[in-house]
Structures are given as structure tokens and as C-alpha cells.
Image (cartoon, rainbow, N blue to C red; front, side, top):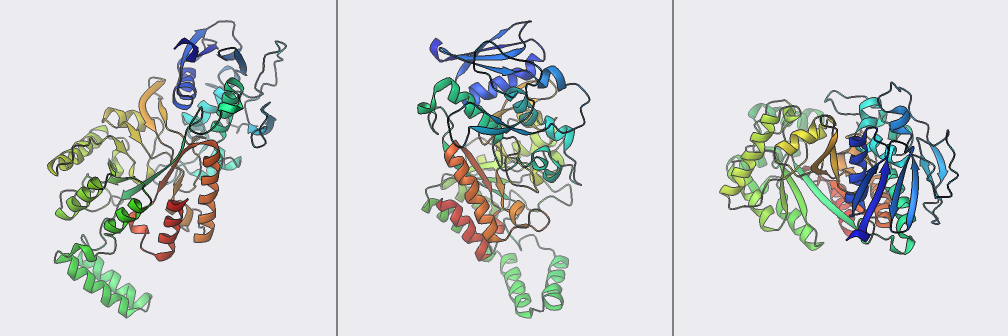
Length: 456
């Protein structure tokens, strides 16, 4: 319908990059379509819906993009002109400080289009965040953490301001003009069993640690007994094989999850060690599928820049699933170790047939790495265009909160953080993507925390 078309006017400079943001804003966030008019003389973006028009300054692409800017943008609080107590003043950057607008048309104080590209294309990470030994961008060195913005979906908040000006507050509720709130629970199956792939050398080291370091000989005895039972084929006694309990728990709360399995053979010391063809893994795959949960791929460590290896792993998991009578296509993924490369990963995943990816989060920090909590199409740095693959930002990984090498929260603090994000997204709308490894549900405190999230 023509009255559901958003009209956008822009200058021709870097129009492919700008169209990526228009696609995300209008098609992914507002669920509408748009018509783009390119004017050589345009020095602002103009966005019109029906009779309402709003202007946005073009600062980033006009003054910063493609230039050697090594300083972090300055972030200040700006009046949004929106009559909402939580959104009347927001942090922003790329402000319009050089031009004045005398048209009388409502104008935003900051370049929201440029801000969105800055975060959602990966520009900020590529230019400002350092890498760790796994070649991942370190959250604590990122623009968002340094500017104290990682715990708020700042781009989504500015998009909400735009929507409010265009549609009015009465239509601006989650599930209407805003994304509906949902919880997406997921599990990376790195260790489906503790003892199935134990070597005798590893067993001896663990037993020695129980006796000599931890001073718990009874624990060593129990470990040895479990090891023998699992090796003899009694897989149910393995403590990490908690999938029956996990499936029942999800069913109790009427929730569906995505389980990401590794199908590739270990080619790195960081890869998980299990055979996707093992009968015990087959039982888990069938159990998960029968309960209505989704099966996704957990691409191995070395697939980061290896499209052929990734494609083989997709095909292998698909073949295994088909052999078990699971006909659902393998179209979702999360990279092992969250090894994300903004310049290459989205394109490689799409070429391998992946349509939805759930990697996009920092390993060392929870929060909103892309500034939003809704699925959006990826930007391809090679073609400078939008891709079809949708990225689902990862908000919380349990290890990010609880591991001492990362945030090092207590279980109580972690629970408070999870509730904080839940309340945020319950108000704004969006998808709360949570990653909780099955082998991190063994300790009672952690299991209780996970149950608390399910109950929210």
C-alpha cells in the first residue's frame, strides 16, 4: 500500500552504505518499505511518513567516513524532542554543530543514520576495539564500553524516537510499531558429555588433582566410577548429559531453544572433541528435535576465514540430521568461541546457506554490541551492500557474567544484570538472546539463575 511507504531523501554520497541503514531502520525495525530519492543538493536526510516529516543531519558520511579519524567520537546527552520520560534525553554522537535549520521541520540533533552504521556495520569495532589471542574484538576496549553505552540499546532507542515522531506515541508499543519482546534461549553444545571422550591421560590428571590439589579423594572415586560407566555405554550417568532435564525445564515454561552442535572434526586445541555421528549424540539430536527445539550449527574454530570448511560442516550436520529423520534445514549458526570478523563472517556464513546467526556479542562483556536487540540484515564490507543473512545480537552469555577472566560477577550480581536487560527490552521491545552452555547448568546456583531467567 502506498500509504505504508516511508519516503527517504539523501545525497548520493556513499549511498550503498546509507541504504544498508535505511534497510535496517525501515524494513527490519519498522517492518515497512521505503522509496529513496537521491538529490545532489541534499545536506540532510529527510524521512517522511504520510504527512509527518523529520530531518536528520548527515555528519558521519559527510565529514568522517573514509577519513583517518583515530579519536573516539564525543558522546553527549541531547534533547530528543520526544515527550517520553525515558527517551526525552539520550546520549548521541555525530552532532550537527556546523549547520542551522530554519525550515521549521522537526530535526534530530544527531546523525542517527551515521550512528547506526558506526555500530551495526562493525565500523566502531574495526577502527577502535583491540583483538584478543583468538582474534576477537575485546569488549572492554570498545567504543561502547569506553563511553559507558554497552548496557543500553542506544541505536534502537534513537530508532524509537524516529518512530515516535513519525507514528505518534499511541502506536509506539512493543508488538505494534516496535519489535515485540521475546526471549531466545540457546545452548552451544561444546561438551555434551564430560567422560565420553576422556583419554586415560586426562583421567589420571583429574584424579590426581582431586586427591593432591583439591584434597577430595571421594570425588576422585566418584569420578572414576562415572568414567567407567560412561565408557561402558551408560551415557545417562554423565553429568553433562543433562538434556532430558533441560528439555523438560523448557517445556515447563513453554519455551523453545536453539541447540548449536559442532559437526567438524577438531583442527585446533580450542575445538570441542565429540563425534556428531556417535549414537549418544544422535539420541540428543532426536530428543531436541522431537521436543520442538531448533538445531543449529556451531562452526568450528578454524572456519573463521575458511568458507570451504564451513560449508562442509553445514552439509555434514544436515546429512546427520537427515539420517535421523530430522528434515529441518540447517540455517542457523553461532561461531565457536564467538569468533566474529565483521569484514568476512557474514558473507561467508551466507554463502554456506546460513540465514540467521547468533554470534554477535563480546565474549568479555554482556550488552548490546550493535546498539540494538532486534534481528537485522548484515552489512557486507566487500560489496558495500546489505546481505540477506539476519544477525541476532547476543545479549548475555553466562560465561561473560560469571567467569573470573571476564566480568567475574557473583551469581546474585549476574541475576540482577539479567533482570536489568529483561526490564529494558520489555519496555522497548526486542529479542533477548541468551546463551547458556549445558555443561554450565551443573552447579545448583547456576541452574537456579537459569531458571530465574526462564520465569521472567
